[in-house]
Image (cartoon, rainbow, N blue to C red; front, side, top):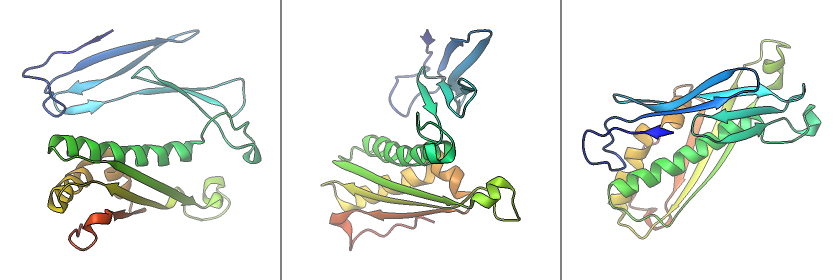
Length: 196
């Protein structure tokens, strides 16, 4: 059951206070999965457990969703779901799309379509600890395309605001591995955005 308290009219960006609880009962113990806002700091939680002693991992989200994460067959899994790296890349891609759409709505800009293609590279030797190879992602590229009939200056404002605050992208950008390229076909000549 979710309860919300608002100190003024609720709009997509004027929520000042939301408290929301969702509890998930596990087979042998209770896990408190919560999400909400404490002043201006949002928080979300997830719970993960392996399934049947193999790589399959069930993820339960504080928003009530579930997913199965696994590895491809060629890496010893059963391919029952996306692998953790795909989940990371999917989080980045969806965060970009949603951030653009939130700010477009906020500024009254109509967006017809947002497409994102993300690819990530890592050195398996670093993961396995075989030598001193770099651990973690070496490079993540995000290519985005935005289709809109809106004025280019309005689109620039939407993109600037979205990329200043997108949570997943900002977090990954701090690591220095994220490279972004953006295409807005109608605004090729008139739109210049520093995405660094």
